[in-house]
Image (cartoon, rainbow, N blue to C red):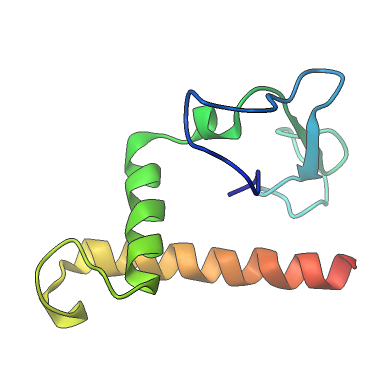
Length: 106
């Protein structure tokens, strides 16, 4: 989650406004600058969860559950669909990438 104390969609405690926008590196260009950002940065105004579509939210939820040993289908990882496993791998790789970037930024 972007917001550490996020209670979930529609219950945002501190909605970012134009004055308090969340500024982050553009995920498309990795800060190099592109047509989607402002010199490698993007500003998030409003609840960040509003930017996430249904399939992405499901992938994030599946990855969270998988980290705790809970999968959508009964059984272990061999019993899961390939699309579920692929989504979990993508989410986990992105998390590791962003965690490494946050450590480097400190």
